[in-house]
Image (cartoon, rainbow, N blue to C red; front, side, top):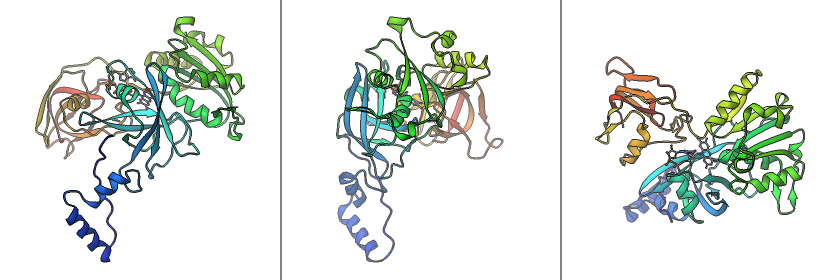
Length: 376
Ligand SMILES: Cc1cc2nc3c(=O)[nH]c(=O)nc-3n(C[C@H](O)[C@H](O)[C@H](O)COP(=O)(O)OP(=O)(O)OC[C@H]3O[C@@H](n4cnc5c(N)ncnc54)[C@H](O)[C@@H]3O)c2cc1C
Ligand code: FES
């Protein structure tokens, strides 16, 4: 089991309580009382936000659902949102974003479903080594890819892109042992789901999707690469003739989302998308990045993000979504230039000329563009 981090409790205000607290801290040094509370009540109000894994459910050969009991300060989520989870692997905490695969549940538990990507550090750890009882760090739910108000919807998902969508569908139509429930809040929804996967056995949540389709809750268009040769966006009208009347939400690889955006633009339609990875432009020259406070210098190429390189070198870095959304990784650039890998834009800090204290840069999407110094 992971050893919980130490956190400091807000101190009781004034009087004998303060004295008692100080006495307790003295006799328990080097651990303060908050450390003991953390050991025995890591999910208590006021503690760093954590969750305890209660169950790991295999979904496909390389995907698993991690069901967790969140700490008391978890504020809930909207169906479709994601949360960040922090996992300690060999002494380094790694944060990644995962969509919540349920709407808010009566039992208060939350779940994510992770697909192990080749060479993926956190995804493989979660799918193959996560165990019930383990404590993980989490952050509050975020994201705008959420269940729209009732109406005609078209979801297009591929691979693990089904995860935020199943969260929205389950919130309307929970699949239970006694069948699919059509909750009152599902009134007024007319939903088509196109789901693309390498094959049926590789398709996460295929049984849920098929159960929803059989119950008449959704119309499912499954496209398996091994059976159907994938999904051709240009033939969307054949699969969903009334797609122009539907609000389209899509989650999947960049190629699919880009093709869909282009297809819809020709009809004057928007697509609401969720991307799990950032699209990158061609890299430029790298340079030596100096981390002033940690005293680390790294000679980096122009394609590796500063965040990835620093973590790899053992520098403790703040991070979050790792794709330029949450600002959880910003650090002041004090001198030199970095390149935004999403669009090639260069940011340059010149001491005495640009912002005092440095220009905040998102290290998860920037690479060195020559020598630079960071206030970290
Ligand atoms: C908003 C949001 C929601 C997400 N929801 C989910 C979810 O519900 N389920 C889920 O499984 N993942 C989800 N992800 C992706 C997840 O955050 C991680 O990026 C993914 O698990 C890979 O992390 P890793 O540590 O295993 O890989 P890393 O060790 O960071 O990377 C290893 C290699 O895999 C590549 N890689 C990184 N991410 C991906 C990816 N998504 N697909 C393919 N290759 C990749 C890297 O370029 C690198 O070459 C979501 C991401 C975002 C931003
Ligand atoms: S980690 Fe979210 S913006 Fe960089």
